[in-house]
Image (cartoon, rainbow, N blue to C red):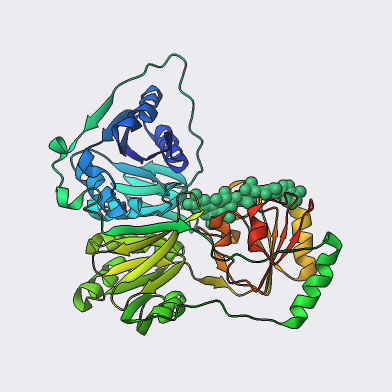
Length: 450
Ligand SMILES: Cc1cc2nc3c(=O)[nH]c(=O)nc-3n(C[C@H](O)[C@H](O)[C@H](O)COP(=O)(O)OP(=O)(O)OC[C@H]3O[C@@H](n4cnc5c(N)ncnc54)[C@H](O)[C@@H]3O)c2cc1C
């Protein structure tokens, strides 16, 4: 079986999700080809992979620089159409862009079935079987599967030899340069700025004041509404699924609810009615299907937006970028303008949320939650350690929550986490590090070990 593994080099290293996909491929077959698009310098990170027995191809040309997900998928698909393969594996997402769009877009452009978020992958008799976050899935080969971080990439044998990285430029590939690089990318970053949203003034208290404080806050029943957009509105937007309607109403006079159906049906509706804007909920379903529809419509898609604005015609999208403390303001120059949007996923009164700092105190965390009648949440740090399941993850790539009281225990407060708790009425943070960023986003702070 011939397997292609699409990998991205991020800051000189292989994207961890792609490492997992590569290890999976090496376990399934001894005919593995790594395909990466990036600048020539990526060769340094890719060359060692030849020691694992994989062939390695770097797709590199100046005209590819600055590609967004649609342009990247186009370039990769042009190259892959000339290759022989049974299965394509991609990492679920890259850890810098974190959009999870390239896998779905690529599958659409190649016209092959897609399975996303695979924890375990097997293939035989022309079928690929995957255990995903949704259960068991299967697809006929050739297919594309995106992998979670379920596999740990092996070390090369000490007897292995370093091979060559084959470089393909656009003279060989013949991509349409209008669809490549920065100029061929429909999503444009207009500006980036320091993220100040969600900051609160923190009052420090002692641990023994926590329970009486929670009692007092619950009795106050002080539900404040989150600041909403109140500028000029778009005439009409499409909202795919009920979850995103509320966000859509903030920026549009008319919201047209589109039923969650297959990408093909939504695509056909969009071609017939030509909406200016389509919004999707940034949940599992939206993150899987929106990129497919974007690829079908050849339009840009901004992932995981935390805020939307408009001048009445254009959609302006905001999302955290570059590791967190920066927010990027993005516009899509093609129509329909599409975005997956973070929406309020739950409506609990109290959430007790744990981070890496309490990885060895999960029982105590559960006890506190039980005592307060609270729901449990987690940072990605804790979920990545497999201490709590993914459906508990709160943050940019997890859920957005707006409880009356959010208690962050052992969480440092990265923007990827705090951007999803802005709607909480009161935030209480417990952390022994008085300089932890979480205190800038909390109303009450307890500088103690939990
Ligand atoms: C694109 C992208 C998307 C991301 N999406 C998410 C997301 O959805 N959700 C998310 O949470 N993160 C997300 N992250 C990761 C995020 O940037 C942080 O790495 C993560 O939130 C850190 O988790 P943490 O706060 O649990 O761990 P750490 O940053 O390691 O912090 C642990 C904290 O615990 C404290 N501590 C230690 N001991 C104790 C104790 N005994 N009691 C109390 N506190 C203690 C420490 O002082 C420290 O502040 C994302 C990152 C990227 C790049």
